[in-house]
Length: 149
Length: 156
Length: 178
Image (cartoon, rainbow over all chains, first blue to last red; front, side):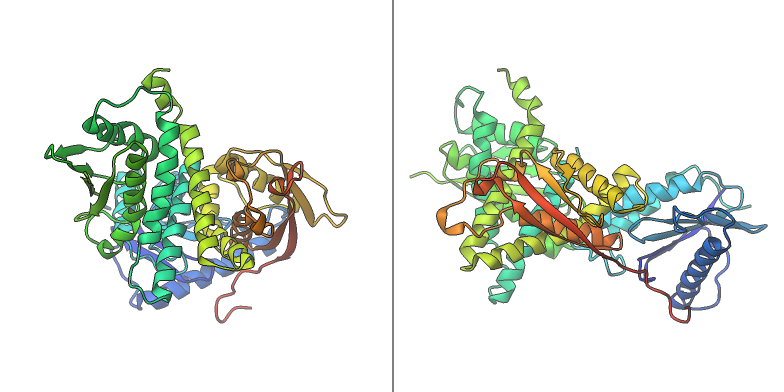
């Protein structure tokens, strides 16, 4: 199992942080364009999921979308009530990735960005400590055990 | 404990307020108000911490109390190392000081470190003042989150 | 009491330290500003800065989702007071439209050792709380306003903080979508 890369957006769609581990192929566009595409896709898929839902959707659409899966990789998504969006691409056998996303939010973002007064919450994250902690949490996770074969 | 987070946020607001104000008044990094707020808080909280215990034997005993009981209550760990020249100078080394531990592990943001230790310098000075020891307290940060507090006792 | 006993009291000491530190902040502000209204404003602004961060800690800690309605919001605010200040205000006096309620505090840790001097009668000593609520709610796309209706520091039996819902803030739409 492996983790490929990670995106984090604020509620205005600004890319706050990007990191990659075993990313084998780049998209061929700038990071900025890639982030814009990613955010646009997330936005559309969420509104689609909510519009097409055959069920009574009183709990809102925000928690509605969790992941998509291709034959090669899976994209896992988490959104907090504050509109923070976390995206993790893994191979498609990874399990419990949502737990890892929650852990990144509560043990890395909240601890090292929210509780770091020098980090402005509405700006991209520049803290080295955040980056190091994120790396450690991802690498310690069961999702990140081996390099892709 | 949940209220720890709240105290850290309040402390950050104190820092933010004092630095913004000194910038507005064109006094570059005048942290004296921060130190003073630490002093008043330390002066008063030490009473709560010492009211149930016997008097201290001497100055070193008092400083040790700051390093152990006060530090572990307020800063969630004890001071890692205490040095003294036995002539009124004490150096308290905390390898992972609470108000720096979320900021950096290394030299990033080092220029901001003085703002996040000034309140505590005042707090130590206030606590010791209430226990009858007049001193100056300064802090030295070379590598976050470590911090050395220098206490210089003023004898008259 | 043994030294061990004194150590076990850490929680109480920290809560007192919070109260004392907040007190020194208020007196610093009173020293810095001649005008009490300015002090009230400054306290509210600091509360806002705390609120926008505290909400993330609250969410991470509780795992709560979005609020279903304003009743749900009221209960979550109540839970927040329990978690962060160790007090449980009562929710009461709902407005007829369901968009307004009061938090009633029998005791308030912020004011434990405080007496207002006569020249500060207009001081909203706990105004930081109004700011915290505004900041925290704004982060979950809700605009609220709050104000003190009763205040124990001014001789009332309880402290009453009135909270009013203003509007829901919408999500930003990415460029090129509708």
